[in-house]
Image 1 (cartoon, rainbow, N blue to C red):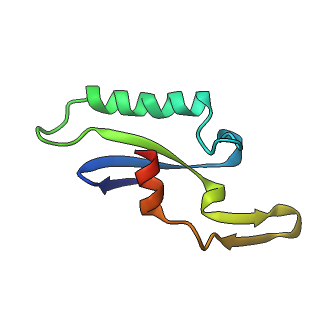
Image 2: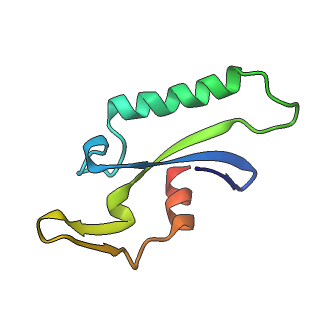
Length: 90
């Protein structure tokens, strides 16, 4: 999903737990590299003058939902705040 945030164009990628370090909540090296390649490709593309470069951000799925696959339970995290996440990520 591409969103605008404080004058920046942000590509927000929802990452499953396999692509996120559990201890840091940040994308692993492979995923971080893929996000960087997206930013680089966008900056090198022919874009309309005045448009902002995209900034890629990985959002761990477990910050949005709590899930228990063994018991088939899924619930939204009541304490998730997208604005706070974006402040930390950017």
